Length: 235
Length: 251
Image 1 (tube, rainbow over the protein chains, first blue to last red):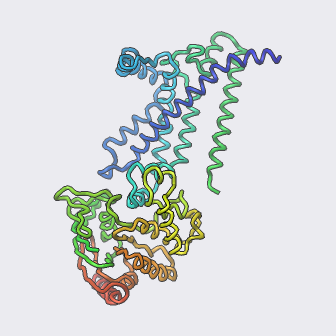
Image 2 (tube, rainbow over the protein chains, first blue to last red; image 1 turned 180 degrees about the vertical axis):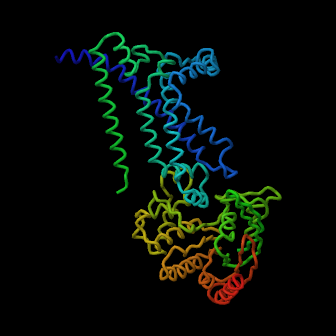
Image 3 (tube, rainbow over the protein chains, first blue to last red; image 1 turned 120 degrees about the vertical axis):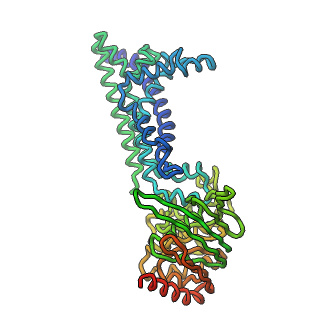
């Protein structure tokens, strides 16, 4: 009994580690780009009516949420494939290729998770009283300082909520990852891909164990993030 | 303080438009912009602070051009050297009283980390002591009473030793008794620190307390600018003027 559990656990550690690595990198990418985009979209702009085409940009930023992951994967292949616009440049300049690598999987997951951060951040930044930002300016703060000392700290709860959703989304990413990174055991096979493959191959015990493990990890993550939230609630 | 201002600004909100076309010249320790709400006083103050950009015109404070559309000058708010007290105080809710007061004293990395140098800390301590807020230095601003909030907003704006202090209806949110006291206190503090004030109000009693040059606003235009003596000495006459003007406006 003891031995057989270990036999199941040890090979599952590889996709688990990979899943965490991919999801955390993807969340970081989605956080940085999502906060930037959400902040830009929240600004009223010089005309007072926002950036030109702001709503179109907003729709574009939401697109990954609506499109089937396979479509996103296809777009990424077109962009980052060996003959793709960016892919060719990356290959020629740095000798890098994202196809069939864990970095490729992280890119796919971060594109899919990006709208969740972007949307939440935009709403949170729009909720910050503009007078507070004005007050900071009149006290000598430059725009970067206003962002880091006033806007971001006040929008933090919303941004954090969006980031947690992004992490959850990145953990479960399947379609786009499969398109761009494939399902190479030990290299790009995350938990969700491993479950699929185990079921397809009829390895029922493996599949059941992976499913249980995935569920456990997700519950643990949810509990941890819930704790993070309640401890931040002002009393 | 010598202020020369001549600006135009059109605001559109749906189908309604508001035209500000204000010009006046004022000198002295106190300028009061008086008029009913919606007459363009706040817009003028925001243009002076650099928070909105006028469509055209020129703003000159003590010989410095803050804004001049003819030669393309539009100094950013952070460089104008004017302090601003907002109507709702706009205190930073995520910072303590001391951090609010010291906000403008340290920029760059130290400010980001909430650290001030020795001179900055001394300045904060001095100001908190002046207003009797030393005991509340570490308190969050949402725990403060109305009068205390106003004191913090005032100290925050004064900490950088601004060339002028702009006050946007600072007493309207206070109850009558407190209003009386804060009016006296704000004036005394500014006087003590030698900071000239530009005050926005629609309350004749504010005019009586501050005196100086009174600029009468009406529907986006400056009707008159009359200079009295500073403080309560000229204030009584100034109040008589604004009361008479107000009655003639409605009569």
